[in-house]
Amino acid sequence: MLEDTDGFRECRDCLCFAVRRAARAVTQHYERHLRPAGLRATQFSVLVRLAQTGPMPINRLASQMGLERTTLSRNLRPLVAKRWIAVSEEADRRVHSVAITAKGRAIAREALPAWRKAQASAKKKLGALHLEALAAAVR
Image 1: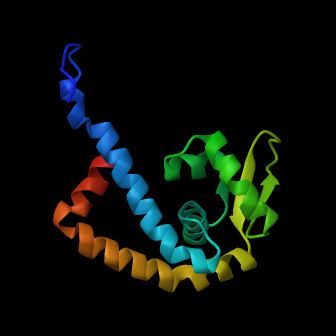
Image 2: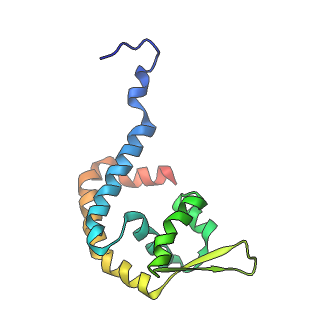
């Protein structure tokens, strides 16, 4: 092991890195389950959010999902192309609203059993970590 001549030893326990690595592992877990339905975890999350809330401006959806607007817009393109969501302009042409389509609702409903399996196994593996407290802390 290298000497700690620059004072970086404390960075071994970087909470940011650990949480990001854990988030990637959890995302990969869900994506393995959702893959047969042809969905990525982020796509499923968008569809479910819109199914729960109804149409909303892209800015509000980005905020609710904890994403930058540009990141969300990039993630929405494949959903629009597959006609799982529809994007429309509001009266103020700078505001775009997004809504789930009947086709999007059907694909999300089809993927729901796979999501349930992913959720149950993730909770079983991570349950001791007090997931409710973690979720509350990041809100």
